[in-house]
Length: 386
Ligand code: SF4
Image (cartoon, rainbow, N blue to C red; front, side, top):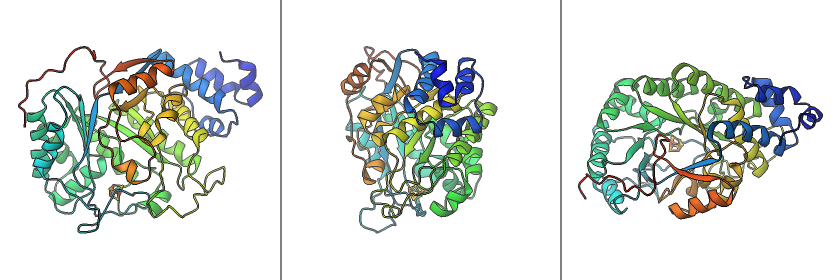
């Protein structure tokens, strides 16, 4: 139960009214929510919005992650995943390896395959087209979510063509959707420090807009808890909201807490937030960021509590702070775990359902595009086994 008097005492009675009246929040509102000392009060506002959209449902998906390579021409300072070619720990999968990973999963056990990798210096676009065609032939019943805007930009450079052309070719090969990675924080100030080789925020948005125009849905992320300010987080959210107003092509927003372990930032004070802290985000800041995201992104249907980065326990709690999705079974997670993620590598459907139910929500299995699916219904199995 939300009490106006309490919000007035906190100095955010006007935001309470805006949420009640479904009025769009602005930058200053977001800053004040971040500065509010009562995270439960902020979370209750976000929960109000979340329940208006999704009632008591909390989504999950049966999915599998496949990383084709961690060899990358870039050297983002927050990344523990990438390696240079020949460096210890570098890997690169052949097309056969990718299909082998898929075939290790029993048919009918996944509805989504999520494929990303580093910006490899040499793999041609035909490698990726063949990969996606192979995946679709092997598992015609699954949706393919593959290649961030960063990879699309890189493929276009290597191929000497436009990002729109790359997107169209990959869409034709079978990519249904782009994952939301690579957005990091759009702030040019931060990108210059942390990932100067990577495409800038404007280009990330442009590529996602192009994907939307081609009929592809995409997700969006925000990496927080490194050197950015709360204002820069809010600028990031508002830039996403603005593109979503124009295209409507984003499905889900995923705030990702930075994991410093094994990155060049591991021993760097992370000190430029309002709190002046020198350590990564704590649980309260994670929950507040989920809640503020839910409240600011009024045109996004879904907010994901990505259990790999948050831990499963905090992701469960985040369902009460504005999140409505827990992601999925994953099967094999490399990116977060190479950066020290403490969560499990994979979950079963039963584990996900239990976490959702014990959190007080009703589990709703979904596909990649958030269409509800009936778990009792076997997936169609029209493809050929590898
Ligand atoms: S974040 Fe992506 S682009 Fe940056 S170094 Fe890591 S793999 Fe490469």
